[in-house]
Image 1 (spheres, rainbow, N blue to C red):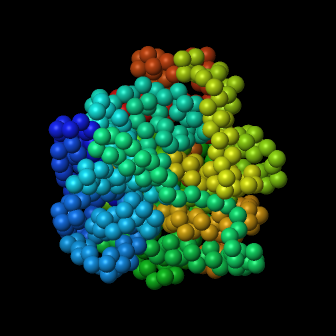
Image 2 (image 1 turned 135 degrees about the vertical axis):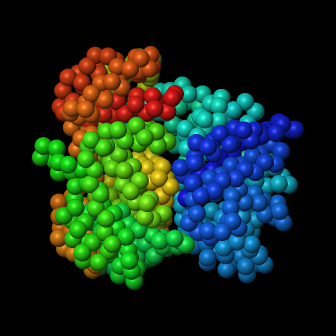
Image 3 (image 1 turned 90 degrees about the vertical axis):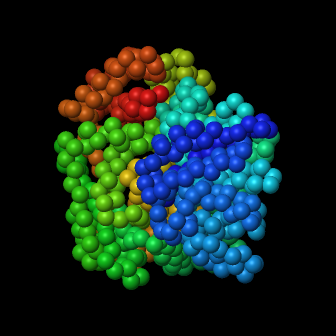
Length: 591
């Protein structure tokens, strides 16, 4: 729901650059095509691009200033319980001049301080300026659904909703971060916070607030963590109890995400997750529900659409269904715009699918619900069952998930970017953290709080917001995520994964959708690089900019180019597309 930016200067009497903030806002225009604004108060300046979803009036325009409280805010996201919080705050004596959720954040911060984030159910990134103290408080939601990037500048700090927006402000270091590069090449293009692929840009971790004092002193606080295992009262629960709790909690999450002053649709892939969201909306009286599916042509034996399943769901619930078929001849020229829309390089094939789907969906609705997160939260991936009895959590996870081991990294990267096995060391630290004892729970926690944040969730945010479309993800309602972490892993992983979710879904979803083979968002042309797609990759990797950057060893690239379909990652991705996408992103961003 919008894009935000800002600059903070630390030297007394030095004004923040509104030109830099405006430059960032200009780069964020697609995220907020319905309005824009700037706020400047001495050493602090905020910028905002607005997508009107809640309170369509100018009363909720941003940056929002509450002169009586001495607070100013820029905010990106949606607070689903803002009406309940408004009532509570009104009971404390606060009055409101708007009907939106932005003003609720201002009052909540004034009433409860930085811990107000613990009361929020929603997706959010924000910056709040205290006029009288000069303090700035930044924050991000528990599951990192909304992004917030940071860059240190001489004597100050800048922030924005995207990495390219920060770079557009000028003076940002764009050298490559070797640690981030190692993660990108190992961890399926996931670069965990606070790193980004650029040395000069960092990202605020999920579930984190950052207090910046006028002199630049900073205090970072993690306000939420995810613990696995039973809680008090769970000992007596059987499978039927967990199944009912899952359906009840997911139903509540889906209902929450209907909060809007515009219609809400569904991205209906035909899989269990989006079908269940559609079913719960229909079962709860949502009439005239618009659903959207996308498909590509088949390549070899790999089918490029799942219309047969999305059609079943659309017919069953009588939705206003929209099939969107995209010929690869259209996908190829759109790839450049898709890559430009990425805040960070993201290798998954379905980026282009979400990008093209969002362009079409945004012509009809401004908000959609989407099924991202169910596989991570409820154990739907193939690498979880081998970890049930694992005595080597780190080794077994790396073997089934990592795209390359460190030995191949040495073979692939120019020696300038080599160091220790950063990704393996990072994984060891993550798995050593308390709160998850079993190997499978360590993997589920990592994937939910890190991999999910910087792959599927970021992908959907980037591609939908590029079209001025807001995506809401009910499977990442933090109450549902906490519930799933309490359920024994065996109940999640049985029968091919997501067993407890599948059994809950049987109450409302047709059986042929639940019992179908597991599918993925198929874009075969980017998995099997042939014809014009392969020529694009050759052009990208042989461009002068690529040779000057020199990220990869030439003999490694030649091996990938000689037989692209032989070099596939454990997660069935193309290694050639992964290295090409990284270079493609640098070139399209102009770095």
